Image 1 (cartoon, rainbow, N blue to C red):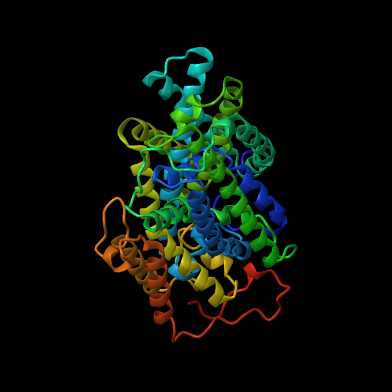
Image 2: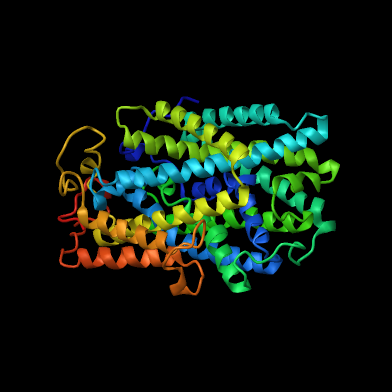
Length: 479
């Protein structure tokens, strides 16, 4: 299969041959990896038992997916990725905000997936073959995983879609087998000796709902368009795409995370996950666990790396998508080594997801509000101005920036960062009784400020002929 040549340019309708159910396959198959499974361990590491972990994960995921799934509709209509599409509201240069957010999100989650998967692989190989679990072994396994990931990401969307369909079936079977492997040690109570992270049950439950549950869908705020841009609005409805995206997010996140909770409680994983997971596995399950750690990690990080390549391509238009993908693959690999040798797993993960949620949510909220205001009608040519090195178009605003949208995002992000409960206690935390509500405050602030700033602008005029291709018609005015 040839390497995908298309970057963040507009996808012609004849190339948009994917179906809504492909979204379910790609979101499910790519997430059944230990890098996502480990988020089910976070509630346990916070001191919650099985039911507290399950309810917090489910609540966060269901709400987060509901807020995130509409973003897939943006690229369905614009025929390009989400960060480029956001130029309709932030300006063709202001959309770099989305590109940077997407790059950081994907970089962090790619490194996390390779990190967790690599650790589990080394531990499995140590038990199976006696391979020394030293620095050289970790370095070699990380390098192999990173190389395999880069190959899939460089080949592009069609290869990753095929891989996801295989992984959706294969990894599901491995997780089911895993339930049998760990069932005899499972207990619904919290891990002995692990206390509530925030001192009380409900504060810790909400921390789990945000950092482990909500953070899952938020990780996809800039990724969904990478897949939905290959679906044609001529052949598939927005309702079908939204439903498939929501289902894919919920299944793709809850299935592996709930396995993570189950297995963490079964092996008593309080301060670490990968090590106890392998140590507590029966010998017959080690080969299955090794398959999950390797294939699952390559599939999950491959999609993240593909998205990173698109985001860097959007930031540096002169670079090809292939070149950008190799660069971000190297960055992610370096981050993996740093994460393994210098960071504490729980603190690093919690801090990263909370901080990225605080700055990513306002961008997503503004993008969705903008989509509603313009009624899904985009000028495809104007969205590509920055990528082509030209100026002008209906999304030029002031020197390529929509100050209103950028200000709303900045204020929302600032409020979110001031309200987080980890890695530091923000000054606004006392207003919520010590409970981390940063994502809600960030989203509400961005929405209120943006709507107030564009209140006097008239709504964009919808197309006269809804059956026409939306990406070829420009709105009369953009908010």
